[in-house]
Image 1: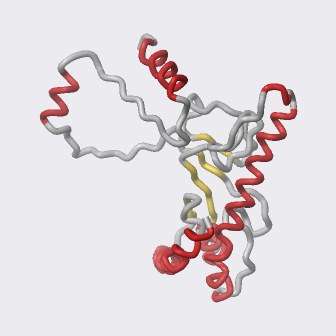
Image 2: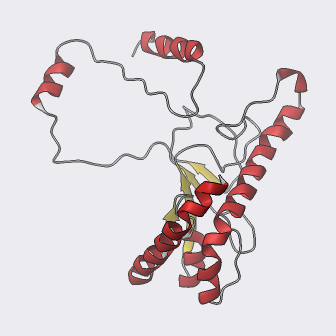
Length: 203
């Protein structure tokens, strides 16, 4: 991690500068940003705009129902303590994100005479509105009021048509089932059982 931070420092600062040029030209009322565009909150503060964090995975929306994606769940014998553990993983993730992004925004904040608050929160440290771009049916959980799970976001492609060979494949039999296993890698046996169970369910 330390080596990667050193290697990407110049690129990160260039990204901040280029993003600020674009934001300053656009003068937006609202900046909706992903955590990798960690300058969103600071830019919104400077421009007098609203900032909204948006994620594609359950990473920053605190819940007691499960830990942050990629962190091991507590063992069953922990009983009710597992809920506190789960929420604690989100606090830890937020602090790590604040630490990891602070250095890249330090110069920008100084240049614009702004106090540097947390990159993924409001300047006073309170949580930003958070949009989670996945389905609550796929990841059901209870979240605080600043979190909204919106369903998946889809890009409209009104002029796109499928290639002939793809169209022929899709029409040659029953609709195919596509299963994609993302990160972190699940246990293969469990993944296979879940995929087969879902594929066998009636439409």
